[in-house]
Image (tube, rainbow, N blue to C red; front, side, top):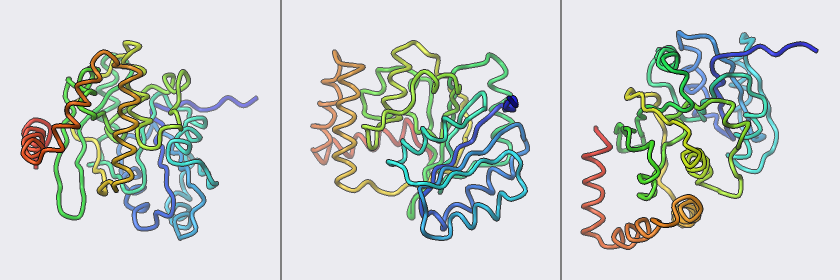
Length: 262
């Protein structure tokens, strides 16, 4: 049996009908100076020109694996791609996301080389039609207590050992918080999460619909009930306070001062 080649990184792109975004995402990877990676693209069976652009941009790559078939949502697609991975570390760069410069993999490999960390994470630039800001993920994000705010590390900021996904993949019963549940599980197992303090990616964000917000709050409560039960009341209190317009403005101002910079 032929032995599979091992890579430093497995970069995974999950997409569906993403013809507007996929080109910039792939090009941001192809421009990386560090080349010890494999690239897995999991498409959900797109009906637009997504696959045409993917094949056009990756036709000369020997380290790319492409799958286009229906799945049960983003986390199921991510799990499918993880099962194909051969890199030491896994990173998710989904359609619409781009590495912030061409040295990200090089800088991350150098940082990881210091101590062979389990999980490392950096900052991300959040982008929508009207705003651009840097979200800073500092050391506090490696502590379970911070998750009581309802937040977590977005997957575009994080490189995690593939061995961790062999222990636990994303739980697809969660529609929007499977990455939060995954992180809380390993923080509960005393897995080390280490901040790198440099920007990783530009992340295209859309506003949550009311349905998504409801799912987010419900699933966050379930995650905190599971991993932070004695202190879950803190998140419940925050939700109640945010319903007050003055308190909401104060929260947003504080978040902007502490975690964001324009």
